[in-house]
Amino acid sequence: ASDSFAYAVEDDVFTYAGPGLYQFTRKGTAPSHPRFEITGTSPASGRFTITLNGKAIRYTGALAAGETLVLDSETLTAYRQTPQGALSAIAGLDSLDFPVAVPGSNTLALAVEGGATLTQARITCRSRWL
Image (cartoon, rainbow, N blue to C red; front, top):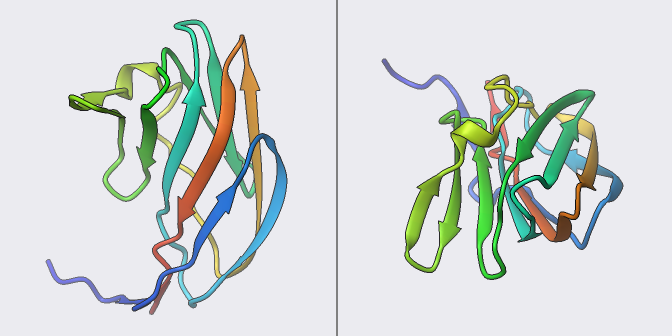
């Protein structure tokens, strides 16, 4: 199947330094499936919550120093990028209903619970046009 979308040559990428409520403006004319990269630490009972435009996805599980949690809404995957390679994190998600970025203004909330810390969140929007 062919892809009928045109994609940004230089994508919209936004980086935030911790939990909070953020706004960003995305290029394009069609909804897109972003990639989220979370850097921080978490015990096995810790939780990261990413809410984009009212749709939340939660990861509960361990994240060691030096690892990055990657949630990819295009491929519907989640993994921990470790120095030894990628380890599946799908089992830690509360849902496979990933958030979507829309053209124009987007609202992003980043939250932590249970001893988790978030030092950086990077969102690659995968902006596109129809």
